[in-house]
Image (tube, rainbow, N blue to C red; front, side):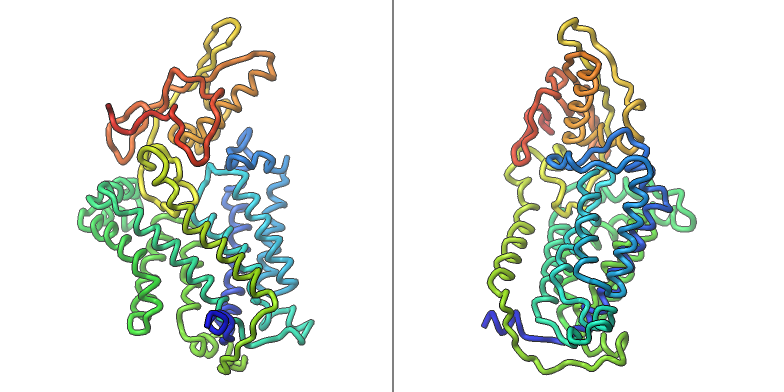
Length: 438
């Protein structure tokens, strides 16, 4: 029964069209990072980058290296789009994108994480079997069908993303629109829509509309009677996000996912009129069935488990940030901090206040004022800097943080040498003070 469901062949028009759009968006994301100055601000100008802990070996290339790096990624995006040496191009893009994602987190974005995951998944999908240079050069690989699992692996990934995003919004500051109101205040100077976004009814619409959209969009797209209306809602939702929040390719990538929900016959007639439609429903069980099933089973167990880890870590994730990343907790809170660092020479007792402007970019300073893992990394960095000058120092942090406009409270224990602490990925760091006053 499982074999019949997973390996039954269906028309592959949706995957072929998705590959073309996906490759184009990978190209635009890569070259866009060059021309918008993102690479300069994030990877070139800073003295050092805050990488994901454990990936310290991933460092930006010196000089103009990162511009060439992203240009090469853009080329791979184009090769994916036209389907030339697809497996190699897709794998190369997936590795390069993952590396640049993990080497910096000052511009942490759930959408970048999703692109990393999708790039990895696309490596295993037969997306070059039609309308590709590969199929032109090697006619023997041309096919009009694909195993049904190719479609469902994308759908299930999306279901995880949207479901966790919806559940994460079910907390008081979101439900009473505090978060949305703060976000919209930052948009009040937007031309034409700035004043409109300040209305309270708009805040309620966005807050509860976000919960309902994230929670229901996948089931509504799967259900034929509601599919068309869900797609229209998707267009409105993602275009709004694109205009107001300016989040790059993600809204358009999200709309491209709709290809997997509509009947393949419609996709074929609309985009690939010359392609024969496959409707034989044959079952071809892959010789790689067992490793394929085990591999994706492990992958999805991890995907389901990672967003739950903050429930097993002490205190509120909105305060501590522990378990926040890789958990689809998208645009959930507004956080600000007032932070000073100082070092104390362990031999002489001399204390020196740190001028953050000498070490960090403006975006890095925001992270180093509110995110404990970044604070810990910066403390370690300062310790190494002073060690290079022959000084053995302790690093202390005086930090006050506000979450969702609430009063500032002391965030980090100012009496602890943070540079001497160890970072625990799955445990609470007790130098982060409690979110609630005792």
